[in-house]
Image 1 (tube, helix red, strand yellow):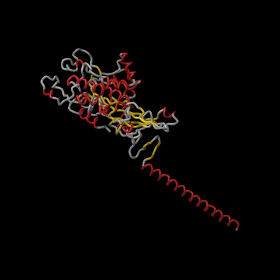
Image 2 (cartoon, one colour; image 1 turned 135 degrees about the vertical axis):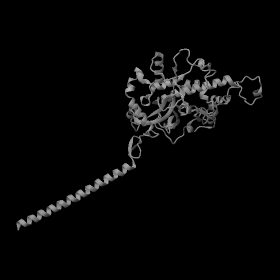
Image 3 (cartoon, rainbow, N blue to C red; image 1 turned 90 degrees about the horizontal axis):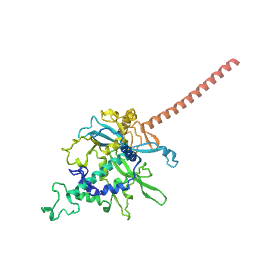
Image 4 (cartoon, rainbow, N blue to C red; image 1 turned 30 degrees about the vertical axis):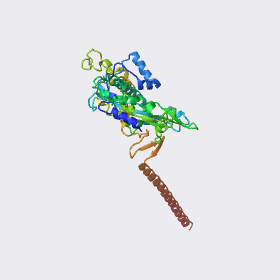
Length: 417
């Protein structure tokens, strides 16, 4: 679904030096995309709670600075929903819950032991990781501004070979073109897919029938923007393409750019949970926490750790919540959490969130229960067998009854004689 411009952005960002791995700069020249998107953002109840806890100085996050965040899988699950049950027009009592599974693995090491496995609601996961990706993108383009004079974009000019030009020859200035395309994305007919992380209407006909756009889990490994038939974005209409309904203010068709959204589910990318101060960014060897300050947990990891269900003991993760008083309830429920995460990963649920249990199980669809082929055969055999036995029993009863009457008749005739 991504267009040519988005592909160009991905090619640029997939080079040896990824745009989202660039170093931070002390002063931000501009806050292009981040400012534009964040101006539209509405704080969620969860993010407000997170801020209040930070303001209160609560010590509720373990030291996970030696670990990195890795995306594993996403999964929809259909489950009983109170609001759906109370809605007479809903047509079902099952609502769709969206989950993301991620891990905290030792930074730079394998993730076979001493790691934590977690599941969080997709909206919480995307809120944290998208904010992180936007900040990294902004820092990348700010560094590009400082080192490559973005205002002078003509890379073919004769000044390229002029000793008087003040471009930093040690900096990869291909970023100039990438950042220019990011900044002018909408002018070129593209909308960033991250603008649809919250469900929003995209179409309404003359009869009041509306369609909505929001994130969905594709194949368990990708998060895409799809078309939904309800305002909560629970019921995906996979037959429709969201780009068919996107237009700018002048009525021109728009396309989606997934470049930024893709960074939130890239399995080959890990996000360090160690918060590095901007002043220390270029002096890692000298500073490296030699000033005596305790290392801080990066905000993206802090937000996700707080909001997630945790499975840690089963993987030998000793640095987690089990040492902190604020998590007693989760510690008691950890086995249940581990089992739930296993179920999410095992293929128990279809892409739409319906239960599916192998060839001998039951597959649910739209709140109903449909027997599998084997179950249908067994049910048919049982029904036919029951009917056959009933018929045989009736015939046997009839024969026995007739026989008994005949015997009585013979006995009576003999007595009279």
